[in-house]
Length: 504
Ligand code: AMP
Image (cartoon, rainbow, N blue to C red; front, side, top):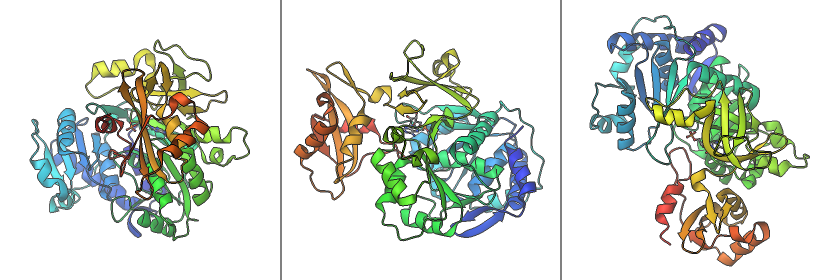
């Protein structure tokens, strides 16, 4: 079974349904997209001499061609390597070299920089705006190349907030499981739904797009190709039953934007990939109604570890409502989740430890990295590197990644707890907390804050706020006001960069 069979089936079940749209303009129906996919697949195999299992990279901002290229690669029995188009030239060079992609689809925006890379193997680039791409589409359609469920489908290079990126090998089975979990644990999709690709299709938005193909949902690409709150609101107003995936920082940008439009069409905002602060989740519920769903996942178990669904977000009468809102929800249907110590021994409810995951969505390993794979998957469980705690109902609350945890005077401090408090200050837009090496305490807490109006905030006020909410030893010793928090291309705050900026 090949993921490409989903597109073939959609072309039969939902032939005339719109499959792709650019802004408010419908481009192709499912039967049209499926034909383009089968033609492109044929061209990939015949023009470039590719063999099943070869890698095809995509260095593309969100665009209507993304969907057909993903499915054409699978239709031809190849492996797709979607790369965030905003990465640095050196990161492109590393990833393309690491996976040895023989074919790479780009736009003219990247033509010069990709041509200048030092790639040691043979690689052809095709500009999707060129006549070459148009001529690939003139090849006759071919049938789907058979693949086994455990064959690789997608190499997901992890966002790399630290170290060199590694390619998580995701199989057809892993991604089909992710689709099933989307329906059962995140957001049921009806055939008339639409997905707005507001976040990069090389990551969460593209992954969740696969679920929409199985239900004949329309893939809407914003005209700008990026994330522009005004445009997102306009598209919500236009498309009935629309949902989208967003990093919490994107949700925050939508909340900070004065709404001019009607959001009744909105079906769901599925957020995840980084921490959502309770204040922001409450503001989101107030603005959009009960349409927020959270997922916790990682490239190694794509979008599929836990979820906090819309009804959990809405259950205000629950005695632990706010605690639940601060959590990432319960295990998704296809995985087991447990909390363990360094020896992989399970820890009791209420105890912080590493989050381990096992199930059909978990990768088979990292691309050509046997050591790293063995380490991440030891004893049959994915070691996420994330720390968290389960409550008696199975709700998981994330603490921080081991490297982000601060140890001050022998006590563990989870930056998120401190950030949750700081963000409550009415003039704080964003906050991030790190540890600064200190002779006396080992580490002390340093807070980086961004003020809403760009003016200073009285540190005494912040200290009072912290005093009223958290233990004294967790209070920041130093505050640094900056214009904006450094973030990577997926909207994750780069704590490594903050540590470098912090000179004490
Ligand atoms: P990536 O592999 O790039 O998708 O990054 C995955 C990492 O993002 C996870 O290991 C977590 O550290 C973080 N993450 C994902 N989802 C959430 C969430 N809902 N809340 C907080 N952090 C998250």
